[in-house]
Image 1 (tube, rainbow, N blue to C red):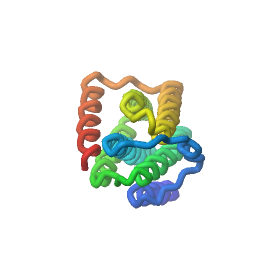
Image 2: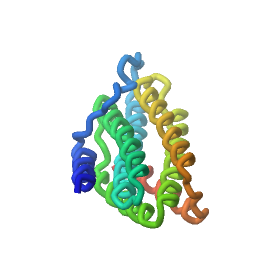
Image 3: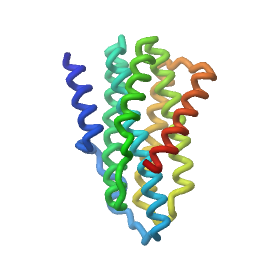
Image 4: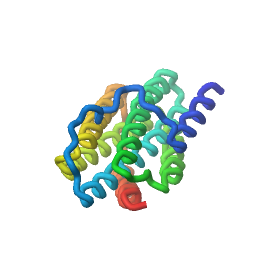
Amino acid sequence: MDHLILNFDRAVRTLSGAATARRANPAFGAAAGALTDAERSLAVGLMRVNHAGEVAAQALYQGQALVSRSPGLREKLDQAADEELDHLAWTRERIHDLGGRTSLLDPLWYAGAFAIGVVAGALSDETSLGFLQATEEQVEAHLASHLDELPAADTASRAIVEQMKQDEASHAQTARTLGARPLPLPVQAAMKLSSRVMTSLAAKI
């Protein structure tokens, strides 16, 4: 029951925008340069995609933790989710600083990722960890591409994305250490396809 209450609280904070970061925002103190309208629009779109990804990450972890058979794994998932809450708050703050808004489809991303997390967690802890590893590796690569795309003058967004990238790599390594089972290639392909759909829509809607 306590875990159900915790998951409900996380869901409300995730979708309401009430999530607060435990760590300092990496953007604080970044000497951002002036952005053109085109650069600002690009940055908003990229950070909106990153925020949508963090909404999905929260749901995935919550779904996995809800059905996990291992108290130790639930603890690791909750710890990763706490760090992802930082990412959620940081990206939302940066989007608002840039004069943008978060994705209108956030509830859809949340519902879909939660369902995937429940299914993965119900199969086995090893499979659940495999989903965690594959997801984090995809996100890390995705963030690396954003560092290439973000305007050089947008040092605030770049600082946030760089810290997120480091955290995602750490989460993937934790999953490997805990015994993640590699996912079948068709599943990995489906994950990449769904990620492309989400990023394409979230950037605009």
